[in-house]
Length: 511
Image (cartoon, rainbow, N blue to C red):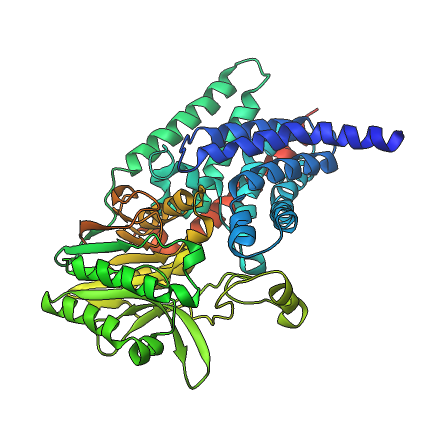
C-alpha cells in the first residue's frame, strides 16, 4: 500500500509541470501563440522556486520536459511505425524514451539552479535559471550529435517581440531571453509590488521594445540581380517513395513538373530521384536528358536532391546537385540523422535495422562541414538537406560565402503532423539569423520562399502537388550572429551565472 501511495504522490507531483510543458507545443508553428512559452517557463520556474530541495526541483524540471518534448516531437511515431515498420507499442515507447532523455536537460537546469542559488530567489529566478536554460539548450544541440529541435526561442519567430535578437545572439540567445522573461514573471508572483518589482517589469518592457526596434534593422544588403525561382513539390506519399514498382511514378512526377516550370532556377526536393545519380545517367537517360533540355532552352539552372555514390570509396551521399552544370557540383549533407541516415555503434545496434525497421539508404556519409556554394548566374547558393538546418551554427561557414540559402527536404515521413510547420519555422530562424533569403523545396511541405527578416514571402499548401514561384533577391554582408555564432549567447550565459553567484553572496552576507 505504501508503494502505491508513493507512486500516486509522485504522479500527482509530476502531472502539473507535465501539463504546463505539454501545452507549450501551441507556442510553435503552425499555432504560433508565442506568449505560451514565457508563460510556461514562468509557471515552471515558480514551481522550482517553491521546491524544498534541488532533487525535488530536478523532478519538477524532468516532468515539465517529459510533457514538453512528448508534445513537440510526438510525430516521430509516424516515421517509426507507419513508414518504418516498427510495432506501434515499441514506436510509442521509443518516442517516450527519447522525450524522457531530453527532459534531463530541464531537470539538470532546475537542479543546478536550485543548488547554486541557495536561499536567494533573485539569484535563482533572475540570473541562474535563465543562464542555465540557455546553456542547456546549447548543450542539447551537440551532445550525442545533438537534437536541438524545439528550442524555446523558435516560438518567437518571426513575429514575437524577441525575434529581433536572433541576428545578434542566435536562437539560443533568444531562448535565454524568454527564460529571463519567465524568471521575472515568476519573481513577481506572490510579491507586494514595490520599486524593485517596477524596475523588473520595466526591464521586460524595455527588452520587448528593443527587440521590436532591432526587427527594423537591415543587417545585409542586396547582391546581384533577383532570380525567378520555381520550387517543386511532388507530394509523393512516403509509401510510394522507395518501392521499385513506384520508381516510374516518382520520376514521371518530377519530369512533368520540371517540364512545365519557367524560371531562372528550378529546384526539386530531397531525393526527388530515389535512385543514385549514376543510375539515372545509365538507365533513365531520357528522363534526365528531357529535364536538362527543357532548362537549357530557357537558360535556366536545375538543382535536384539525389543520392550520389562515390564509386572509388563506395560511400554515398545525400546531395543537392546542380544538374544543369556538366560538372555536377553539389552540396552534400554534413550533419546526418542517427538511426535515420546512419547506424551509430553499428556492431551493437545493426540488429535494430535488421529486425525492427525498414529504412532505405540508412548508411550515408557526411559531406563535410565546409563546401563551396552552387553558382547560379550571379548568385551563390548554400544548400543543405532537411534536418541539418536545425543546427544553425554549423551552417555559418557556408552561409558566409552565399547570397541565398536553400533547404531540400522530404518530410513525408511525418505527413499530417505539425513537424512540417515546425521545420518551416526553423528555416525562418536561419534566414533571420543570417540575413539571407531561404528557399525550401520539399516533397510534401513546407515548400516556401522566406525573406531575410524571417517572414514567408510565398508558400505552398502542404501535401499537394504544385510549383511555387517567387522572385528572390540574394543578400550579402554579415549579421552579428553570422560573424560570432553562439559566442555572444554563451557570454550572456556566463554573465548570468556570475551575477547569480554575486547576488547569492550579497544576500548571504546580510544580517
